[in-house]
Amino acid sequence: NNTNSTEIRSFVFYLFFTLALLFYISVIFANTLLIVIIYVNRNLHEPMYLFLCNLFVNEIYGSTSLLPCLMVQILSDTHEISVFFCFIQIFNIHTYVAVEYGTLTIMAYDRYACICKPLHYNTIITTRKVQIVILVIWVVSFLEVGVLLSFTIRLKRCGTVINNIYCANHLVVELSCSSDRTVSLIHDLIFGLIFSVAAPVSYITYSYIKILSVCLKASTDTKTKAFDTCTPHLISLIIPYLCIILSLYVMIIQPLQNPIIYGLKLSKVRCACKNMLTLKASQLYRVLYFHKYSAV
Image (cartoon, rainbow, N blue to C red):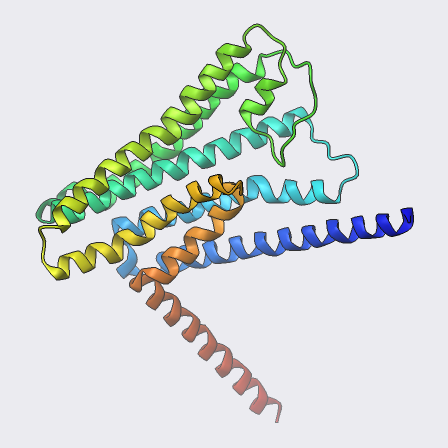
């Protein structure tokens, strides 16, 4: 019985490891493919697609912060992580979330400017401004999470067990027996929830209310255009909250969700992807064809 239970346990662990590995490969492949497509196609060098490219880079960053460590833990018998790597993971994961919502917020403003102020759009949103905004999002996210961790690192920890599949700041704070624990939890609430999530979601909601009010008065073509460009953005916002309600980890779902949504829904990206894959297939065929007749 013990032998059978051990074999079943090993089989389950190896199954989870395989699924996690396949999922990670899919995330890297899908996001990298769309980044390359946006980079090589000059007609996609527009503000919205630059924001999407930043989003895809962040998905690779976020999934790499979680999945490799998770796969190691699946195959480990002790399920241990050093304090140093735990804080590194906290920094990476919290930065990922901050950049994610920061990018989605700017994308909401981009859609608002495009639909509500179309005549001034090219003046309001320029490539140079987009590059600066993307840089600011990353710098602010690093600084925000760095300040948050500076309070957590100083706490004296009395516990060593985290009941989660990855390290999170509030879980490490809960292990503390220091008198500053309450202060750290308050900072976690302010930086982690209000600045990173609540404020961006509030602005995104406001932007789409304004977009909806304009669309209600617009022509059918404008409504269709607004629906096509805004739907992927709304889906990428709604699904994380459904995942939270269903107790699924956003860190696992989100990195593969966005490239699928934007890759399938946005016609320019879909056509560029199709053209690239067709071109690569034809080049491969010519190489094989030439090799065949050269051998003859």
